[in-house]
Length: 350
Image 1 (cartoon, rainbow, N blue to C red):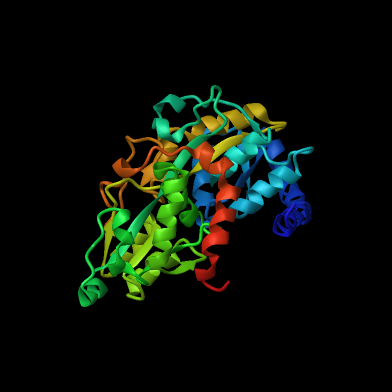
Image 2 (image 1 turned 120 degrees about the vertical axis):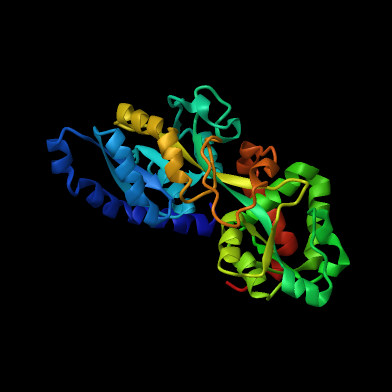
């Protein structure tokens, strides 16, 4: 076990006492109302939690949701550490590649929620019963600073291959896949689309034009928006946000397809509240739930729910590659190790 993983798991274990206290707090009230208390582990942003809880409990009135919110890696580590005495009932809002990793360790209870057939096939597990269902997706795009490009006579790229041209040397910034999910989804997509050898050859060539690898998925688009670099490989929502703030960027969707990741929901193996967990899982795939997701992410699991923000590229959903999420999850550590060996010399200081 690596030192980093051990530290993460140790932190999760030390936090269990706090979790137990939070679960117990108010338990008498929930029991008095005849409700089942569900402990839900999540990596959703904290400003989303109250709205999600209120909406779900309104439609599933016999449950009382208690959130335990941590970063993606910490959530996964906690579930692994608790495998012999599960404290979570449900995962709601965790990167699907992490959920798949937990499934492969036998820590997910298979269940196909009612109305899961209404979801876009790309957003559901292909196993029956399903191990997980998707909620929303975040996509890899190019932020292109038009003002700086005009000064330097740099053309707008149309494909990922265009970024290999000498004119882009030292003008590209992208996230480090070892520290950013936005970086990993881009690298995973290139390897899937091109195959192993051609994929790494592409990354070798792209590396020559990279100025720096950031440790934040947002930083690359922000740097392009500020004119620090001409091209930032980032994710969709940050690109739309920066353009809406007035940044002189075009959001480019390469014609050869874009990588993506999603947040997902799953029931934790060993929950003592299985029926209630299933009821909440049913609600998480409903149209009402997807309408709630769409307030935060433009691409959600139900294709009949649309709420695109200002400046969001209309063609984004159609450009999403056929993503083998299980492959991306299974090969994550090997890909990151190889990437780090080859390219980490250009990473920004931590």
